[in-house]
Length: 127
View 1 (cartoon, rainbow, N blue to C red):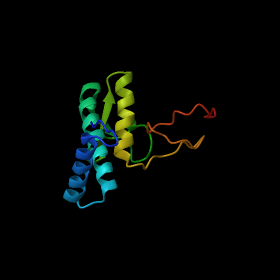
View 2: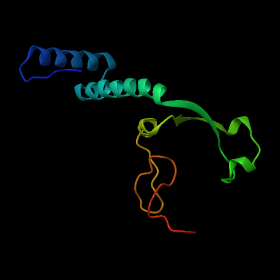
View 3: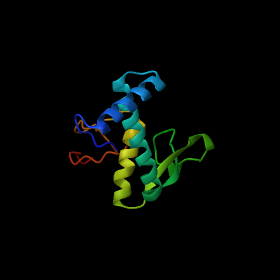
């Protein structure tokens, strides 16, 4: 977005822009940097998600069992996205990471963060 050089006119204009953003949103200069970066990431993610994934409705199970074995009810439906290809799967993970706000679950077997919402750990023990 910006070609920053320490004393360039471009850098001075960039700093002026970020100060204006900080004033507009009532935040610090640092918060303005985070704001602009987050806005850019969201913009890029929205553009890519529509190309590499599609909307999907899924059914939550109130008992935790197989959803096909339980009756469907509108209040149990929730929106989701499905990838069209492997690149879409990567962007879907990125989308979920953005949407999580950093509140990710951890794998019960190895303790690593679980980006997919499913247990994909190689350390799972056989039942």
